[in-house]
Length: 81
Image (cartoon, rainbow, N blue to C red; front, side):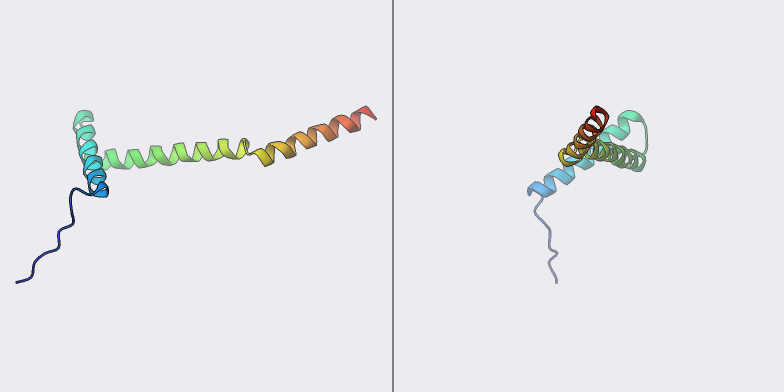
């Protein structure tokens, strides 16, 4: 008879997965929505937030800001001549 390998449920990764599952179920019951819909909506919201943060990060990139500042300084130098 073969014994089945059962991973430890008290590992940090196992606890996080269990807690995520519990939170998803509780939220789905609270909102009266099916669990897959709650999960998909969460993934969609995460993707939208990540895209917005990427746009802001590109806008506030120090190298890009430096180039824009140098362009503006160049315009002022040309107009002063």
